Image (cartoon, rainbow, N blue to C red; front, side):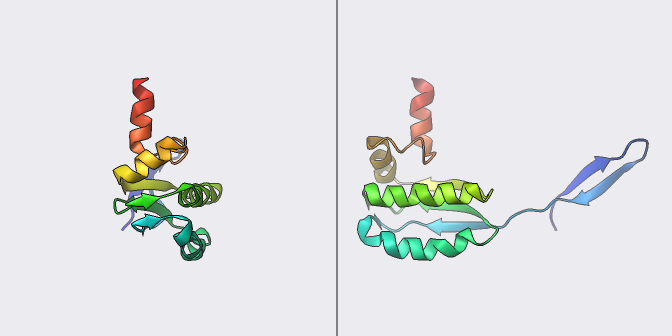
Amino acid sequence: MPPKKTSPAAGSPATTLPVAMSPVITVELPANLTISTAEALHEKWEPLLLGDGDVSIDGANVERTDTAGLQLLLAFKDALQKRNLSFTWQSSSSVLIEAADQIGMGKLLELKSSQAKEDRQ
């Protein structure tokens, strides 16, 4: 049962209303997030843009990435956010974080390590 939200009306006791929650879909990134996997990932992720679920990314398994892979990830994030769906990180590998930081995409992708580095500066 979804959590309930209390909304008092003027001069009346509080009423309880259900709060709508979007389902969260976990997307597991492949070990090889590169141009060679970009087309297949695009086809796999495209239906998620037609749904109403928020997306949580598991990037723990990424062992290799390139600019094309990171650009696809950023385009996916932007497309979700344009539909008012959230894009969050469940986890991310050090390879993924370092590659994104190296080309200046860490902040755009909202990777945790990138934000922590900026807060210290």
